[in-house]
Length: 80
Length: 227
Image (cartoon, rainbow over all chains, first blue to last red):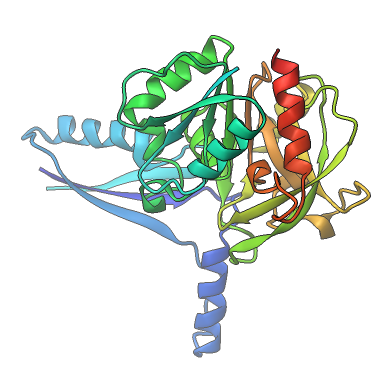
């Protein structure tokens, strides 16, 4: 099954890249942006046919490697 | 005194560290990341560089290397483990020292000499040093030390801050903070003070033909403290 996960910075963590992207968007004329936060997206093909199990495996990967839980949150967004 | 420097794919300060350690009396061995066991060591150094191309997060891949099981066990049994720059990033990813290292606040790679103030001398690394302020070199893109408020309180309560960025007189105001680190933190200990992670490179300051010799002071003192 293909499991998609996103990793985002926690709210209280400074995101200087997001800030610069925001400033650039502003300079390009996108004036209605109040904040930009940058994150990571993963598509992981797991050799597992049970969606609950596949989700569990990817959650474990997020906790152990893909995310650093001191500064990041993870979310499984799609299983197919 | 026996030391080991771990080389990861992408390490580039490992040989400098080898030269520095040998110069001040350590019998150093270079250890490949894919090895299973550390040779007998009194000190293990995780050197600077760009292990695994800084993929995912700096230090994250290296922290899962084969040799790191042995390094973590060595640290947990009280062995001295020092991580410099990328080595510090690897240490935070293993959880041996608290916090994380984020992208520098102003998104610039910083390469320059800085002054650091020793925050704690009750440890093997810094005890008996005459100086409180040393000049070391930094070269990094992700050295912005960060931790939660609760973690910071715990770190301060346990005297785990090792060094702060400062000026040549030891003043630790925000203006002397090159990368946005909380409390100007340049280096951190674990609770037991046998594991030290720091962004500045002492091994780059061990010869007058480089830009200074405060690294020599550090290494001479370290090996004396270990005897």
